[in-house]
Image (cartoon, rainbow, N blue to C red):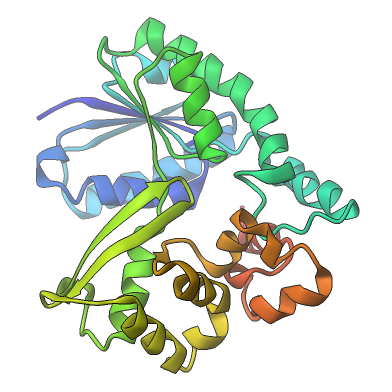
Length: 296
């Protein structure tokens, strides 16, 4: 099976590397082409060198190309993946700083509320440019996979106004499943069967079975409250579980942005937020983490 996947924003080095290795876990996909494109020539060459080493080390026939010419990368692509951060961390900093000045406290700030709207205003015009190129030079039945926030806004724009067949993607489910398996004493997630339902960043485990046995709300609440770590780090998720009977796929911090009454008063935030790590809900935590870990 041979086809072409174009990745826009491939200079997001860690993200692209993970996507690349995940896709190549499917044996039938080893003989495909990855066309990388980004506005940063430096980042492009860095990620291409990393992916070339992976291909060489595993003796794969996979082809990797890189270009700053987006239309060239999109030519003949069957799938297009977008993982862009328009404006980079510098613009993202304003998405956190400006709302905070007026009392809007965000942990991530990239999907809804003030930060998400600011981010969307930068992203949507660019997404529509992508769609124009996709319509003109990609395969006729191309699928556009949006893996960038604000996910819902970007996907909506691409479908409604870009007129491209688009699917929005976001990770999260697997991390929640790992937590649930751990608190229930399972050896691995292989013992856990689950069904999740929802929309971007508001997805919930609506059915859980451990080795075929149904797990109800009360048992799950008790398991989380007894856990020495999650009982402190996931206080908001546990509270929502108690009230609504479902566990969120999102991190404690991210969930607090979609249920903002948990973080609208400074004196209340520490009741629900563990500041030991950004993902639990630290103010501006994801910006701090992203800035601190950027090493290129």
